[in-house]
Length: 326
Ligand code: AMP
Ligand code: ZN
Image 1 (cartoon, helix red, strand yellow):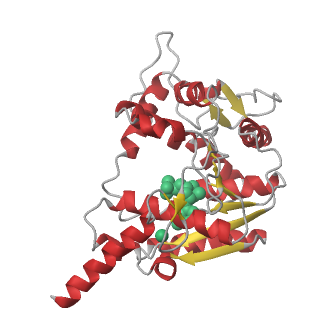
Image 2 (cartoon, helix red, strand yellow):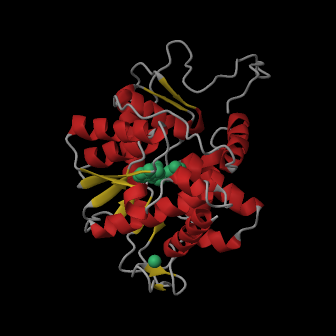
């Protein structure tokens, strides 16, 4: 969200929005012509200096997360701007990567998302694994929505997390990189604080170490980059993400917390970064001690005797049987 008003500051200067530049602005780094405004850094950049800034932010994230030489990385790519930017930058930085896409079977949206991922991989000749929820789990997301009373965004998030973990390990990778950015992480932190969800505080970290042989270490290398910076990177790197909104995501509330932070950011540039980094950078990563058992039905990691995927599957099978009988 950007400020709607454009009233002048007390000293008569006009407020400026992201992307707008004063005439003849100079790049804060090289003093060349700047075209990119970065209010949260009190800086303006030319495209090459912006790209260097972007690379450095990802390198710094990897260093902070303690993963200098992580070995091959599986990259979860939804087809949106964040995960395609993530795949591009990790590749530029020399990491060995493979893309992983899960097609959720949502009419139109899933097709466009998969196409964006395929086109990106084809153009850059990067290896890619595509799986579908229907083949892997037996149901598409709309089919699940019709058979459960739970909020579909929550079910979708949990299924994506479970299947991306499983598929990553099955393909022989120990690390899974995800495209969550600074806005996502700061919004989640605010939501957890407002609702005092202390049980999630430990997991509010851009790296979650593996706690079971069937679960990879999950990392978020874009956590130091804001959404608008990722949009700029995609434009400069000629990345064409799928921009369709998910037609099932109507009830999600996560964007409200992000909007609240955008409001603060517009009034006080840099607030969003301060909020997230003052929390994350002072904490150690969550411990890697194993807290999982093994599911007696499928052999995957489980908190109970049966894993959350199998327990959802059992409920869906029961619902299917009931509707066939009636
Ligand atoms: P979301 O949960 O939709 O905000 O997505 C967060 C991150 O999860 C994305 O940046 C991707 O890295 C990954 N992701 C989301 N959806 C998919 C998908 N269908 N296939 C592969 N990765 C995904
Ligand atoms: Zn199971």
